[in-house]
Image (cartoon, rainbow, N blue to C red; front, side, top):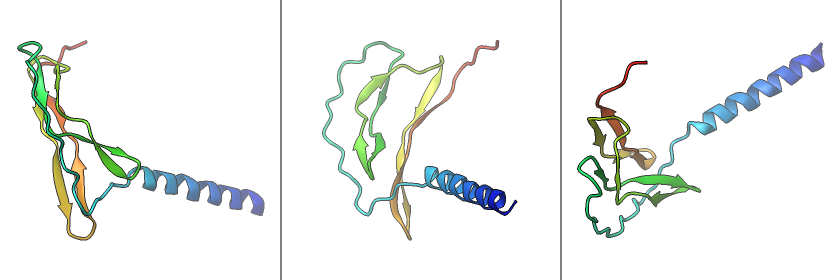
Length: 106
């Protein structure tokens, strides 16, 4: 019984620790500099330019913006990502996202 309780407690500790670390925010003290990107010709009238966008990459951020993308649904708008500042931790990137538009009912 005691061994089972220890196993359950150990499993719970590992599980909650993994959940906590999975939701951790990556903070940087110096924001990375966006590279100069030349906006190419728009592929179609429905394409939207995705400018500055950053992905987490091994404890830092990697630039992934500077491209045209088609909205997933008609009328969707791209809400540009942005840097947020936390006075205790530094800066972190809040990803852009598609919002609005028409949704087909199933």
